[in-house]
Image (cartoon, rainbow, N blue to C red; front, side):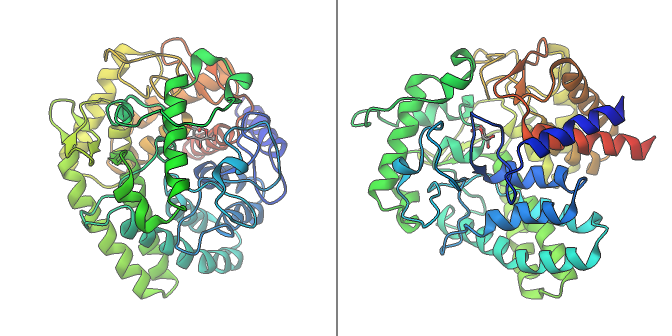
Length: 425
Ligand code: GLC
């Protein structure tokens, strides 16, 4: 059973392999996505270590001069996705978008490095990547935390990786739709429109893209000029964890200056993250920087914060929170609390379960010693696969597979979970 599933997952990775990068899925997402690639590299490493490193190398080959690593690289023209390169117009030789995505590369590279069989290869590849990843982290704190709070803001919901989360509703209300150029969505031609973001949200997404494009994608201006500035605890936890993993890796490779700076970033971030704790919800919540208010929204972002080291009492509370959610939904961990009014079981990030998020939460819970929760998350994840195949995401109430199928990062995480189980057996 385990063996057959691992083989099927490997087939998905091979199917979506374009030589030096993978696409998230055929059709719906025909280019390279930032955090998809980093997390998928973990799965690829079980097939071919060199290929796994190449996945991340390819992403960083498209890093901007200011340090930003874009959210999509449009390697080859393809008009089955909107908004394509012609809309972003970022002026790059190989076109990219002008925004970023959750910075999980530091974590992934450290994980690849730690378990790589080919040590010489790992040292060579990691040595080249460490300064590039560090430059990205520096970019974050320079351009997305200009007042030095220790936490960074996202300027577009797509940066969060959780496109239509309830977390953004209030902030998006301040984003107009007047002046948005007419467009034809492609996502709703590949997936059920009832499972996707709404038309109004798409118009607001596009307004932000046009606004940033009008500012010439100049990252020294974008933050202060954006009506949308949200500090997401999950996103920041990924950044803090990546900084601290990069610190360890840099230390091991003799890059002591990078190690020290990365440790400082992580320490400042961890201290500031405390300010996003909600005793009421027993988890972290977002902070709407544009208005200076916490966002009263119990989403997965505030649970994903456990991916980085948090105070033990908060890790305990998050474990209790997941236990509570397990009474409200069949499959852990829903992207929004089922009891909340906005919960929508099949609409993208407003309820469904995503395996990559499960992987990061489980990893954090493992470090915090919450082993029972880890087992629950892993077994729910694998049950979803057995029931519905390698989908993009799943309904938490009935396990319905949704979105694109034969999904790369879903397959990668299945390999990770099954390999872990085999090792424990
Ligand atoms: C969607 C997801 C995002 C992901 C992308 C490609 O936009 O919300 O997290 O990176 O699809 O899979």
